[in-house]
Every structure is written in C-alpha cells, then in structure tokens.
Image (cartoon, rainbow, N blue to C red; front, top):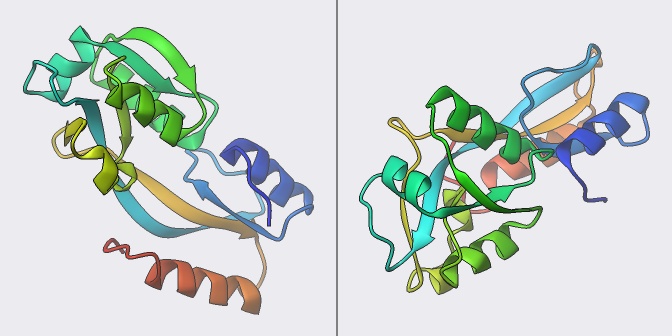
Length: 171
C-alpha cells in the first residue's frame, strides 16, 4: 500500500509497478487502463464561519484562495471548474493536504474548495460551507488497474469493499 498524487499512482499502475490505485478520476486515461468509479463526492466552498458572502462566487471572489495543488486530481477538477465558471480568485497559497487547507480556512486565512466529506464535525464551529456550483461540482474517486479479460479477484474484492464501506452514500 502506497500513497501519492493521482498522476504518479496512475503512471505506476500503467508501468506495472502497482496492481491498482485509488485516485481522483482523470479526464484522460492511458490506453490499457480501466477505471472503476467507487463514488462521487460533491465539492463545497469552505469559508471561515465569520465570512461575509452568501454564494460560492461571492466567497471565492472576495477572500484569499487556499488552493489544492493543481497536480492533484481534485486540484485539477477545481481548477477546471473555476475556469469554466469564469471565477477569478486571489491565490494566497497552494497546498497538498486537505487537513492543512481546512486548517488555514478555520483560522480565517482564506477560502477553499474541498470535498464535502472532508468537513469534519470538529470544523463545523469554525468553517461554513456552501455548494460549489449548481448542481454542485463533484469529484469521482475511482480504482484504476491495467486492462485484463476479467477484473483480478483481489481487485474485485477491494472494489466491492470500497463501494460498500466508509459510510459513503454515493454509488
């Protein structure tokens, strides 16, 4: 079991160094790879509890933006959605860790776009959220593996457990 950025994990699966990886869905998939969606998760705009502004656009345009690293899967999803919606942000920092990003938001240092499931009960008193887009932009979490005639038995079991577990209520 290894952790890393989606792009790096994807490359390692394609090279045969890893059997499979859990990644944020990528818009382009190399030939010979299969993507199995585990679940979809809406993205939210997370802002300090005291932040003025009612909509995602208000918050994103008026507060410093704490960005997910653009090399991460969710970072690319966020960046694409911002461009498509023509929302210009004032970047304050770019980080790899959702925990670090939300800690910055909780301390009043800016606003971020994050997966809804990352807003823990402990953050609820310091961070408020609004949906990111209408309908909300989502990230798709998927299991990636090399193409085979049949899904490998261990990968099939892992996929089944991932889809059923973790308290996810998304297909």
